[in-house]
Image: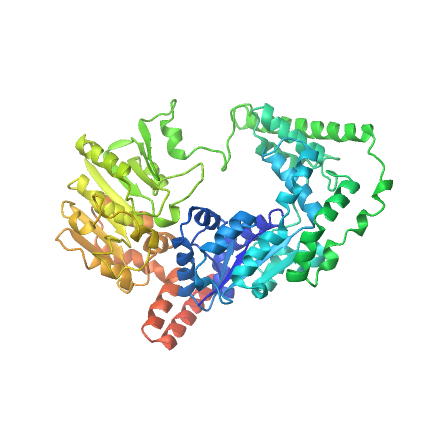
Length: 619
C-alpha cells in the first residue's frame, strides 16, 4: 500500500507556496522522487474536496484516494488542504476515512504559528477577503473559537495514532533551510533539486493593520477590484504600509497566550514535547510598561495606507487606459469571483441564447452556438460536489472553441444521475423536439459521465456517443461483481435510463474507449453488444483513459474525430503512441504487470520508462 501524507495546513503557514510547488513540479517529483501529488480529490492545487466530501458524507472519495495510492505502493502520496484545519471538519474527516487509511499508512503534517501571531494573520486575511468588519476587539474576543489547536490535532491523532502526527512550528528558525517547502521535503523524504520551481513561503508581505482595515472598507463601499489593488500595492511597496505585530497590544497578546495556555500545554505534552520553547511568550512580559501608541502615529498609519492605495489605483488606471481596458470602477473579476464562461455568453446582455436549469443535486446549462452540432456532456466523479462559483460543464472550452452548441449536465452528488427531476428534464427536451433541431448530436463523458452519455443517448436516436472508461449500470442485481462507487450503488436504480445495455441500440455509433486489462471496466464493456459499437482499446490507460489522453495531448483529437464520425481504430492507435511518454501510462502498466505475477517485468518497464524520459530531457 502506498504511504499517504496528509498535510492539513494550518492557514497562513505557507500552504499556498507548498501546494504551488507540488503542483508545478508534480511530474518531476514523481519521476525523480516517487512523490505523487494526488489527482483524486484535488481541484487545481488543493485537495479541498476532502473537506466537502466529509461534510456531505460522500465516503467514496476516501476509497478512491486509497485506490490511487494502491496503484503505486512504492510511492509517497501527498494530499494538502488547509480546510482540514478545523475542529468540525477534522471530526468529519476522521469519521469518514476507511480502515485502509489507518494502521500507520497515513501521516498527518501540520505547521502552526504561535497563537498571537496566527490570530493577527487571520485578522488581516479576513479583512482582505471582506469576511469580517474592521473590529479588532470583537475579533480578539472570538479568539478561543479560532485557536482550538489541540481539538483539531487530537481528532487526527485519535484516528491515525499519536505517532503518525507531525506537528511543526512555523517560523524560519524552526524549519529546515528556513523554508516550509524544504522542511516538508525533509519530512516526506525527498530533495528539492535543480530545475524545480521554488517559492519562498516567507516572501509574502504582511500589510499593516491600518492598511488591511482600509482595504476592507474599500471593498465594502466601492466597486474597485480590491484584489487587483492588492497586487499593485505589493509592487508599489509604499513606506509604512507593511508591518507586523500591530493589531493587538502586548497586554492583549499576553492575555491571549494565558487564555490559550491549557490548550497549549496539552498540545505540547502529547504532540510537541520538543518544541515547548516555541510557545514561550516571555517577550510579552512587562507589557504594563508598554506605551499607548500616540494618535499622531495612528494617523500616520492611516495616511500611509490612503496614499499607497491612491498611488496603486492611479497606476492601474493609467495601465488600463494604455491597454484600452474598461475603467476599473466597473467590477473587474478574477478567478475566484468571475462567473463561469458559459454564463458570459447567455447572461441578459450576452450574445447568445441559452438557459440554466437546476434540480436537486443536478443542473443543466445550455449555450446555443451553431445548429450543426450539439454536444451533451456529463460530469465525471471528480467534479461531483465542486462548489466553485465559476462552475463549468465537462468539455466547456472544447465546445466553445469549436462553436458547438453545448448542453452540460452537472452533478453535485456521485449518484450517477439518478435524479427524477433531471431525468424528467431531459425526457421533456426529447418530447419537445429539442435534439431534433440539430443536424448532429453527440453524447460524451468519462466514467460516471460516460454512463450518462451511454444511457441518455436513446433520447436522441442517430446520435454519436463517446464514452471513456464507462460503467453500464451500478444496479447490484445486474452487476453484483461491481464493488466500486459505493454512493452510486446506493442510488435509486429503479428510475428510467438505468442500464446502458437497453439504451445504446438507437445510436448511430458508440465509441468505447477503455483499457482491456482493467478488469472492472472490461466487465462493463462485455455487457454491451451491437453493430454500432466501436471498441478503442487503450492498453495502459487504466480507468483514467480521458486523463491519460489529455496528458498525451490527444484527448481533443479523439473527441473531434469521434464527434465528426471519422474516428477509426487505426487512427486511435496512431494517436495512442504518445502514451509512452506519460507517467500515468507507466504507473498503470506496472500495476497490470504486477497483478499478473510479473514484478520483475514491471520493474524493467519502469526503469526503461525513466531512462527514456531522461534521454528526452537531455536532448
